Length: 311
Image (cartoon, rainbow, N blue to C red):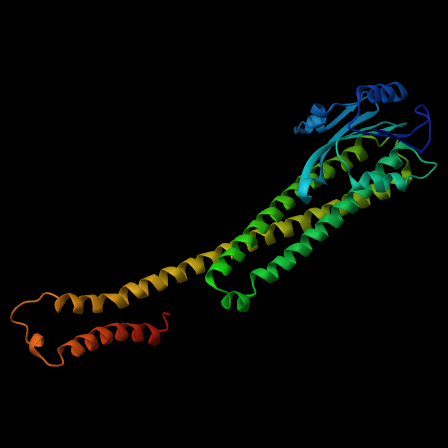
């Protein structure tokens, strides 16, 4: 799909060419109208810095990963490419991105390619900020679920284990989301200073403050992303700690049961040997005596564990 800005403009008069999943015919139209080479998916997917930031004459060839909402609301990373020249801006993408629609709706009737680029990146940074805020809110809610000790204490072991597994799974998903956002911020953070330096000769002076603001915003988002990453790691460690506590409680119960059961087993084994010279066999209350010894031998270790507060 090829979208031209200003809306309704002819290709020869358009400033911004927005290509999504472009066909060969659409690529040919843009190349004929701008005189610029439109990069392919393979070219904008390369990860080395020299491929993501490149200058050919006055044209800047830029690429960065972008994050989009995939199937079942799972975030996925998709590359975007940009070609910026003094006269034109060409964007190539392969998925729906909210920031591009926002920048297109705000596109002023009289503008230049550099202003279109700055407006697009302002929309991208605003969108990243919104997503980071949503991730931070999810982490806050998840943190409350993890540290609700009263609810965990009143929950049965099986239900508590299932809840901790669900929390661990959610922490993993959020951590993956945060890592993808960090990758996007890294790519966006490289593009803005590169454009400021390489296009310094033909960038309008009034755009310089906006580019500086973009750089400060990106730096602040990086710091916030680092904070979220630390919080994800903290919640991961806390959840694993609670899982270890649950497992230790189970082993503690098994240990207590085994220790409490040893003395009764010993008593029953002694009186079950059936030797001829056993005085207790002729006692009238021998059976009751045997049961009393077995019960007391079990209760005494149990009382000891309770007194020591080991259970």
